[in-house]
Amino acid sequence: MRVKLAAQVFSHTVAAGISLYSSLPGVLLPSDAGATAELLERMDQLFDSCNGVNFKDVKSNRRPLTATSFHVKFWQDCMKWFSQWKFVGSKAKIYCVDGWRLSLSALLHLWESVNQDLKFIIPRRLNQDCLESYFASIRQKGGFRDNPSAGHLLQCAREWQIISCQVMPMETVKVMMMKFYFALKN
Image 1: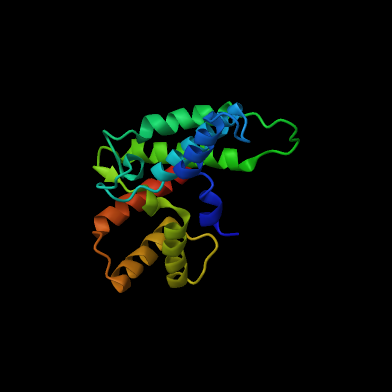
Image 2: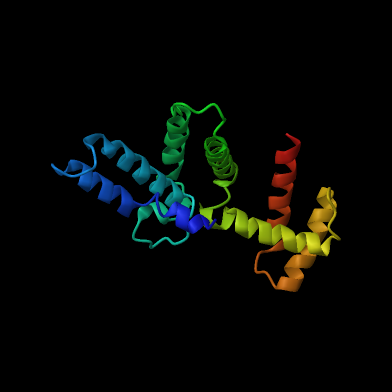
C-alpha cells in the first residue's frame, strides 16, 4: 500500500469538503460529520508539522521546528488528544496511536536536548526513509553487524562521511553519536 495515497485522506481538502457538505441542508452527509472534518484537519496539520522542510512554505505547519514555532505546543496538545481517543467496538489495541505518541515524544525530547545548540530542526530529515538510508550506508561499511559498539558506529560514520563527501563537520557527528549513545544507555 502506498502511504502517500492513504495519507491524502487526512488532508485539508478532504476536511474542507466534508465540512462544507455537512453544513449544507439537504445533503447526504449528516451534520455531525463535522467532527470527522475536524479529525482530518488536525491529522493533516500533524502530518505537515512532522514533514516541515522549508522556512518559506505557504503552510506554516510545514516549516522547520524553531524556538518560536508552534510545533512544541501543537505536539503536546496532540499527545493529550491521542490519549482521549476511544475506539468503540474494538477489542484489539490500535498501535498507530501509540506510534504517534512515541514519535511525538521522541521529537519533543530531541528538540529539548538540542535546542540550545541548534537554531532549527527540519522534521522531514528525521523521517524513517532518511534514517534507514543513512544507517543502511553505515551498515554496509561495518560488515552488517547486528550490535555495533559506539566506537564502531562512529568509525563507520567517519568512513561514510569521507566517501559521500558530506559537508557536516566530524565534531557535529561525534556530538550527535554521543548524545544518541547516552540516550540509549539511560
